[in-house]
Length: 330
Image (cartoon, rainbow, N blue to C red; front, side):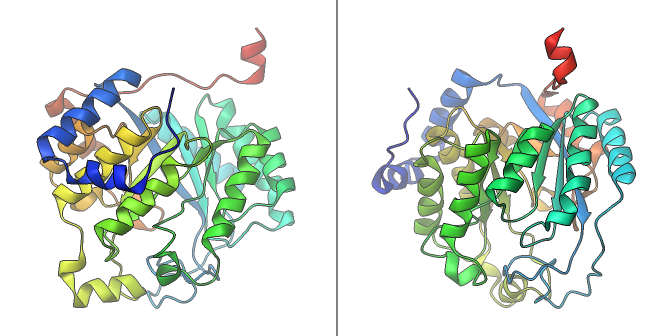
């Protein structure tokens, strides 16, 4: 039975293990629940960029940041579906759509619903991240067939207020409750390398691993510092605050051990990671990546680089399509 009663001391003890022992335990947990040589390929598209009223210190899409990013309106449904079709042709089995909103307006929901339905009809897994959701909006997404909703807690409860002030940690949990109640799978993780301490990373994992039900998807992001954001400017002045590769791998490994059945997603920051670091992350239990040249508004390694890495490591893309309701009935 999967544990949801982890203590902070237990999680801290995992972080403190000798590196090779930690990786052994993580790889063992991974193999008990997942194919060790398969990694899910996901594509992330920004369907509405910039102009977000939130003040998240890491985000260049915040209206509070001074990055020169131009805000855009919500993409046309047909353009989104064309991007999804291209992603599928490139090997992705999961298509994630992100909008820089505090929360979606009711007038935007019909288009959002059509995007979900259209991507699912292609046989791809669908994920949305739109900010905070009401119960009604979550129910609409569930009815459309949305597979996952992403809403990250970002960091530990104690550090949260230092990163974001325009919403609370409890606001995040409320949206996760709405998503769960609607019957949608939860995608929830956070960002490391924001100048936090190991105790914060322990608190971050603890908050996820003690939810009544673990997120089915746990993205672990390494901060991509962008000049003009609060954290981007801070790390430019204090580069030693950036997380080192071994500590990042430790975080992935502890996430895998404490949440063994979840997909652990190696997300933002891969473009600056060595192939060796990525390989260690896969050994530590990461089994999903974002492919393509862009992650919302920041760079990514690209399909060719990922294919070459997979070939060197003997990894393969996870297969399997989401069935439409009609196919399931047959």
